[in-house]
Image (cartoon, rainbow, N blue to C red; front, top):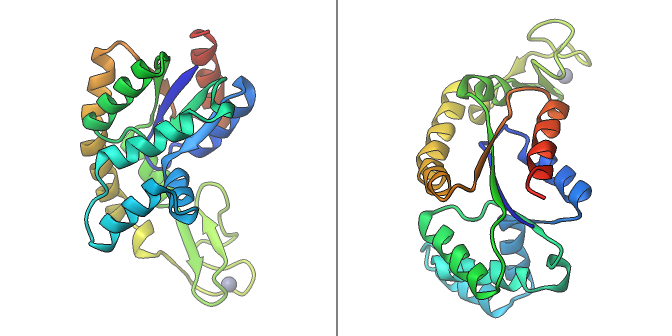
Length: 216
Ligand SMILES: [Zn+2]
Protein backbone atom coordinates (compact mmCIF):
# COMPACT_ATOMS: atom_id res chain seq x y z
CA UNK A 1 0.00 0.00 0.00
CA UNK A 2 1.35 3.39 -0.95
CA UNK A 3 -0.39 6.42 0.50
CA UNK A 4 0.15 10.15 0.22
CA UNK A 5 -0.98 12.22 3.20
CA UNK A 6 -1.99 15.83 2.62
CA UNK A 7 -3.15 18.28 5.23
CA UNK A 8 -2.71 21.92 6.26
CA UNK A 9 -0.58 23.03 9.22
CA UNK A 10 -2.65 22.43 12.35
CA UNK A 11 -4.48 19.39 10.93
CA UNK A 12 -2.56 16.97 13.16
CA UNK A 13 -0.95 15.22 10.21
CA UNK A 14 2.07 14.02 12.20
CA UNK A 15 -0.03 12.30 14.85
CA UNK A 16 -2.27 10.67 12.27
CA UNK A 17 0.72 9.50 10.22
CA UNK A 18 2.12 7.79 13.33
CA UNK A 19 -1.15 5.99 13.94
CA UNK A 20 -1.39 4.91 10.30
CA UNK A 21 2.15 3.61 10.48
CA UNK A 22 1.35 1.42 13.48
CA UNK A 23 -2.11 0.24 12.49
CA UNK A 24 -1.31 -0.71 8.92
CA UNK A 25 2.37 -1.62 9.21
CA UNK A 26 3.49 1.17 6.93
CA UNK A 27 6.70 3.19 6.89
CA UNK A 28 6.16 6.93 7.42
CA UNK A 29 8.41 8.86 5.04
CA UNK A 30 8.41 12.58 5.84
CA UNK A 31 10.20 14.46 3.08
CA UNK A 32 11.87 16.87 5.54
CA UNK A 33 13.42 13.96 7.48
CA UNK A 34 14.47 12.27 4.27
CA UNK A 35 16.16 15.44 3.13
CA UNK A 36 18.03 15.98 6.39
CA UNK A 37 19.08 12.31 6.44
CA UNK A 38 20.58 12.57 2.93
CA UNK A 39 22.44 15.75 3.85
CA UNK A 40 23.73 14.25 7.08
CA UNK A 41 24.92 11.01 5.49
CA UNK A 42 26.37 12.93 2.53
CA UNK A 43 24.78 10.65 -0.05
CA UNK A 44 25.33 11.59 -3.72
CA UNK A 45 21.87 13.15 -3.81
CA UNK A 46 22.45 14.87 -0.48
CA UNK A 47 25.67 16.44 -1.77
CA UNK A 48 23.96 17.49 -4.97
CA UNK A 49 21.14 19.11 -2.99
CA UNK A 50 23.71 20.84 -0.81
CA UNK A 51 25.30 22.47 -3.89
CA UNK A 52 22.02 24.06 -4.87
CA UNK A 53 21.34 25.17 -1.32
CA UNK A 54 24.81 26.72 -1.00
CA UNK A 55 24.06 28.80 -4.08
CA UNK A 56 20.73 29.80 -2.56
CA UNK A 57 18.81 27.96 -5.29
CA UNK A 58 15.85 25.65 -5.08
CA UNK A 59 16.68 21.96 -5.11
CA UNK A 60 15.37 20.61 -8.46
CA UNK A 61 12.50 18.11 -8.46
CA UNK A 62 14.59 15.26 -9.86
CA UNK A 63 16.93 15.39 -6.83
CA UNK A 64 13.97 15.19 -4.43
CA UNK A 65 12.35 12.46 -6.53
CA UNK A 66 15.64 10.53 -6.47
CA UNK A 67 15.73 10.64 -2.65
CA UNK A 68 12.17 9.32 -2.43
CA UNK A 69 12.95 6.54 -4.90
CA UNK A 70 16.05 5.45 -2.95
CA UNK A 71 13.91 5.30 0.20
CA UNK A 72 11.15 3.31 -1.51
CA UNK A 73 13.68 0.77 -2.71
CA UNK A 74 14.78 -0.10 0.82
CA UNK A 75 13.48 -3.48 2.06
CA UNK A 76 11.37 -2.07 4.92
CA UNK A 77 9.29 -0.08 2.41
CA UNK A 78 8.08 -3.22 0.64
CA UNK A 79 5.02 -3.60 2.91
CA UNK A 80 3.85 -0.10 2.32
CA UNK A 81 4.58 3.53 2.79
CA UNK A 82 2.99 6.84 3.78
CA UNK A 83 4.45 9.82 1.97
CA UNK A 84 4.23 13.05 3.91
CA UNK A 85 5.43 16.35 2.41
CA UNK A 86 5.95 14.77 -1.01
CA UNK A 87 4.76 15.34 -3.69
CA UNK A 88 4.44 19.11 -3.30
CA UNK A 89 4.05 20.06 -6.96
CA UNK A 90 2.41 18.59 -10.05
CA UNK A 91 5.88 17.90 -11.51
CA UNK A 92 6.72 15.86 -8.40
CA UNK A 93 3.38 14.05 -8.61
CA UNK A 94 4.15 13.06 -12.20
CA UNK A 95 7.63 12.00 -11.11
CA UNK A 96 6.07 9.80 -8.44
CA UNK A 97 3.77 8.19 -11.02
CA UNK A 98 6.68 7.40 -13.31
CA UNK A 99 8.78 6.06 -10.47
CA UNK A 100 6.03 3.75 -9.23
CA UNK A 101 5.28 2.57 -12.77
CA UNK A 102 8.93 1.75 -13.16
CA UNK A 103 8.96 -0.16 -9.87
CA UNK A 104 5.78 -2.00 -10.81
CA UNK A 105 3.92 -0.52 -7.88
CA UNK A 106 1.03 1.89 -7.71
CA UNK A 107 -0.35 4.67 -5.56
CA UNK A 108 -3.25 3.35 -3.45
CA UNK A 109 -4.77 6.68 -2.44
CA UNK A 110 -4.14 10.29 -1.51
CA UNK A 111 -5.61 11.06 1.91
CA UNK A 112 -6.50 14.68 2.41
CA UNK A 113 -7.25 15.78 5.98
CA UNK A 114 -9.50 18.77 5.36
CA UNK A 115 -10.04 21.38 8.08
CA UNK A 116 -11.81 24.74 7.60
CA UNK A 117 -9.43 27.71 7.81
CA UNK A 118 -11.29 29.32 10.70
CA UNK A 119 -10.74 26.17 12.79
CA UNK A 120 -7.05 26.07 11.84
CA UNK A 121 -6.63 29.70 12.82
CA UNK A 122 -8.29 28.95 16.15
CA UNK A 123 -5.87 26.06 16.75
CA UNK A 124 -2.72 27.70 15.46
CA UNK A 125 -3.16 31.14 16.92
CA UNK A 126 -4.08 29.99 20.43
CA UNK A 127 -0.53 29.94 21.74
CA UNK A 128 0.45 32.49 24.37
CA UNK A 129 3.72 32.68 26.31
CA UNK A 130 4.62 34.17 29.68
CA UNK A 131 6.91 37.13 29.16
CA UNK A 132 8.70 36.46 32.44
CA UNK A 133 9.18 32.67 32.69
CA UNK A 134 8.37 31.66 29.06
CA UNK A 135 5.77 29.05 30.10
CA UNK A 136 3.58 28.32 27.05
CA UNK A 137 -0.23 28.21 27.19
CA UNK A 138 -2.91 27.40 24.64
CA UNK A 139 -6.37 28.92 24.83
CA UNK A 140 -7.98 25.62 23.76
CA UNK A 141 -5.84 22.83 25.22
CA UNK A 142 -4.04 24.49 28.13
CA UNK A 143 -5.58 27.84 29.11
CA UNK A 144 -4.19 29.90 32.01
CA UNK A 145 -6.35 30.04 35.19
CA UNK A 146 -6.68 33.82 34.81
CA UNK A 147 -6.90 35.16 31.26
CA UNK A 148 -3.66 36.84 30.17
CA UNK A 149 -1.74 35.83 33.33
CA UNK A 150 0.83 33.11 34.00
CA UNK A 151 -0.26 30.42 36.52
CA UNK A 152 3.27 30.06 37.84
CA UNK A 153 4.60 33.58 38.22
CA UNK A 154 1.68 35.91 37.48
CA UNK A 155 3.58 37.34 34.50
CA UNK A 156 1.80 38.82 31.50
CA UNK A 157 1.14 36.52 28.54
CA UNK A 158 2.07 37.62 25.03
CA UNK A 159 1.77 36.19 21.52
CA UNK A 160 4.76 35.65 19.22
CA UNK A 161 4.35 37.14 15.73
CA UNK A 162 4.26 33.61 14.23
CA UNK A 163 1.26 32.73 16.37
CA UNK A 164 -0.81 35.82 15.56
CA UNK A 165 -3.99 35.18 13.53
CA UNK A 166 -2.88 37.37 10.59
CA UNK A 167 0.44 35.47 10.26
CA UNK A 168 -1.35 32.13 10.52
CA UNK A 169 -3.83 33.27 7.86
CA UNK A 170 -0.98 34.15 5.50
CA UNK A 171 0.64 30.73 6.07
CA UNK A 172 -2.64 29.02 5.22
CA UNK A 173 -2.96 31.03 2.01
CA UNK A 174 0.46 29.83 0.93
CA UNK A 175 -0.54 26.27 1.76
CA UNK A 176 -3.74 26.49 -0.28
CA UNK A 177 -2.08 28.00 -3.32
CA UNK A 178 0.55 25.24 -3.32
CA UNK A 179 -1.77 22.35 -2.55
CA UNK A 180 -4.96 23.00 -4.48
CA UNK A 181 -3.47 22.07 -7.90
CA UNK A 182 -2.27 18.80 -6.36
CA UNK A 183 -5.69 18.09 -4.88
CA UNK A 184 -7.29 18.66 -8.30
CA UNK A 185 -4.68 16.45 -9.97
CA UNK A 186 -5.46 13.52 -7.67
CA UNK A 187 -9.19 14.13 -7.74
CA UNK A 188 -9.10 13.78 -11.52
CA UNK A 189 -7.05 10.60 -11.16
CA UNK A 190 -9.77 9.32 -8.82
CA UNK A 191 -7.23 8.76 -6.04
CA UNK A 192 -8.31 11.51 -3.66
CA UNK A 193 -10.00 10.53 -0.38
CA UNK A 194 -11.17 13.46 1.75
CA UNK A 195 -11.23 12.98 5.51
CA UNK A 196 -12.99 15.46 7.79
CA UNK A 197 -10.28 16.80 10.07
CA UNK A 198 -12.35 19.33 11.97
CA UNK A 199 -13.10 17.11 15.00
CA UNK A 200 -11.02 15.67 17.85
CA UNK A 201 -7.87 13.65 17.10
CA UNK A 202 -9.63 10.35 17.86
CA UNK A 203 -12.58 11.14 15.57
CA UNK A 204 -10.27 12.10 12.73
CA UNK A 205 -8.33 8.90 13.29
CA UNK A 206 -11.52 6.83 13.14
CA UNK A 207 -12.45 8.40 9.79
CA UNK A 208 -8.94 7.95 8.44
CA UNK A 209 -8.77 4.31 9.55
CA UNK A 210 -12.12 3.53 7.91
CA UNK A 211 -10.95 5.16 4.69
CA UNK A 212 -7.75 3.11 4.59
CA UNK A 213 -9.52 -0.14 5.53
CA UNK A 214 -11.88 0.42 2.62
CA UNK A 215 -8.86 0.46 0.28
CA UNK A 216 -7.63 -2.96 1.33
ZN1 LIG B 1 5.35 32.96 34.11
